[in-house]
Image (cartoon, rainbow, N blue to C red):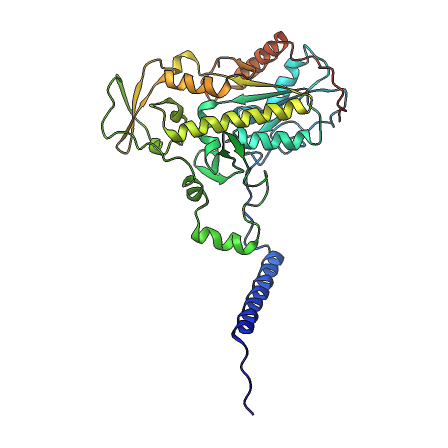
Length: 366
């Protein structure tokens, strides 16, 4: 008597179960061996030798915050991390000493690092406020860096070093996301960590979802007296020159709207937790600025960089927010003495605006 063949559906089901069991066993073995290492989204500091505060960012390790402390959060990018500051006098300590002249109970916490923009700043602030109280949040912004920085899937902790980061998308005029949490794995499994990069470029895949870039012109634009060749890929609208471009590319408009939405969420989160929110901007010294349009070229792509267009972009991003502007006294990278003076001026400006006194609130402080 001949054996009855299995039904095709049963064969297919058996094959699927076998494959799934094989994948599960492979995943378990890879996790046991911790191979390959997971790809982590974002970063907290670019200087592994520290010092770092209790939240993982460059700053002084200090005693736990007390409910009576007036807590100032300073968030931002490379300026906040301040690798030029001495190890025993990081930026949080400089600002704290300056602020305590007006409020002896002040404590300063830095949340930021090189390559940070509002996407990672918001997530760091969200994590902090879930555990601690704050009275004032100061975002030290660089709009020319922040607009392209918030737009793309990866960032640069240091020049030439590219890493994936949590990223938000603009949907219906508001930010959606993030793609994952700060410090969370980009890929959920070891198998996907190994296989996905072979077929999908994370950054390129995200870029296809953005508005198309402006390729520029094939010849120098009229109306510019200065012609300049740059090494940055202007045609991708991924450089600080992006907000200068006239006419404004659609991808830059997207980045401006996204940055504004992230500022709005940072302010809403701060207010919800009983803190005031301020945007700090420090333009370049007069000797490093230009008031005339410039023709920029990269690899045959020409663009008109107009200071008026840049100023309009900054105004659009910050409109309606409590904004402070303190001109930098020193060209980057600033010296420690220049940073001390900047923090002293910041503390004085905050005091003049009466931002260093507690606001009555019914919320419990922790």
